[in-house]
Amino acid sequence: MRSKSVSAMRPFCWTCHRTLAACFCSMTRTFTSDAEFALIVHPYEVNSTVGTAWIIRRSISNLKWFRSKGDDLDQDPAFLKLLSDPTTVPLLLYPGSTALNLNQAKNESWHGLVPEGKRPLFFVIDGTWTQAGAMLRKSAMLRALPRVSFETNVLSEYGFKIQPHPACLSSVEGVHRVIEVLAERGWGHLPANREHDQMIEIFRRMVKFQLNQERNPRHDSRVKRD
Image (cartoon, rainbow, N blue to C red; front, side, top):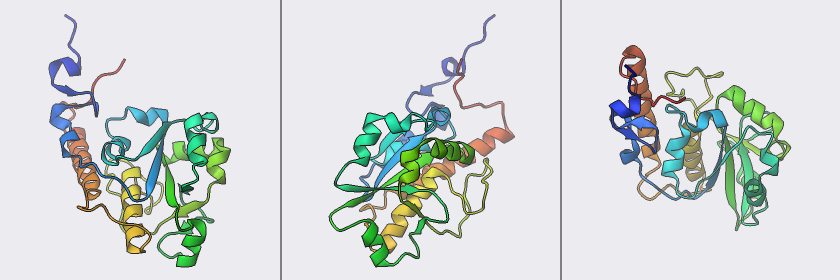
């Protein structure tokens, strides 16, 4: 007798690719971000049921996103159009020795980078840190962007993934932190009702659920893919 698929046995959400018992879509609170974000998602992460890209995509109404391994990104018309938008300043959110520290930068340094009348556009690479590094090496245009980073004394709450450095955060944690830091520095505004905090709440619940799954693997929330 042929066994039924996971999706046939249990109600399934085709938005987040999880069973309804593990679906957090109803928890999302959509908001328009004062600072703009563009998410570059590695193809291996697009359909991940434990990734954080979908949380950002479901939460930020003015988010732009691309699926890329990096080598095809510099030929993507939508990516090139975004880089040439005269109303924004494209920045790469990625650590490095040349990155502008958003916590410590002087006002004149920030305003020299993002002049009055323009909005910052943060490009965020979503994938494992190994994937992110490979994507960056393959895209000359990403490498050419001014880098920015931030400080944090809070460890990532990604409890089932090992980060290469204690200060490394997941994509959703990084985006949340940037929104917070810009508001603290007077370079941006928080969403009116702090809707961005809901991204972290969903992330925490997702992590908790996944850790429970690993302790009790019989209850698999993921859909089987051929």
